Image (tube, rainbow, N blue to C red; front, side):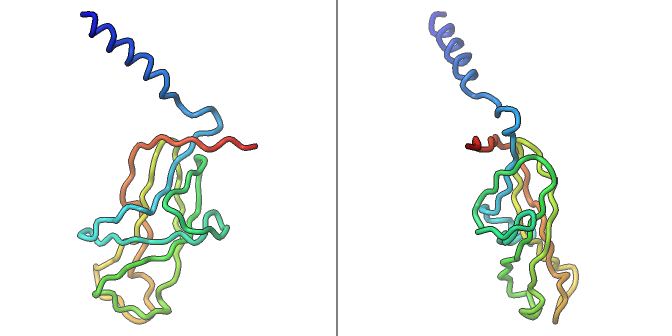
Length: 141
């Protein structure tokens, strides 16, 4: 009985340590680090611009809730890809980011028909996985 009381008290104390983000510091996370499911024709991509500003690509972007725009380039290395290099142009993905969520980005290789030449329709940027994830923006100085 005594150990049950001790465990209950410890659980209460530990739950107090896990607090929600401070108001105004809530965020969502957009990620590109997970290897997507290639069996579903998802491939890696790289973020080149965020909200119109050039960025150095990184695994995670912690962002305030709201709409954000990502310019991305696909990294499809499938032997079925037959388009010219000039067709491999960046695309834009608009994403409504919610606090407490993580969005995993990928390039969806469209295999519904054969894409050749300068046809850029062979891929599209997508969120291939979404999950609950704690996030808090850093304090500003």
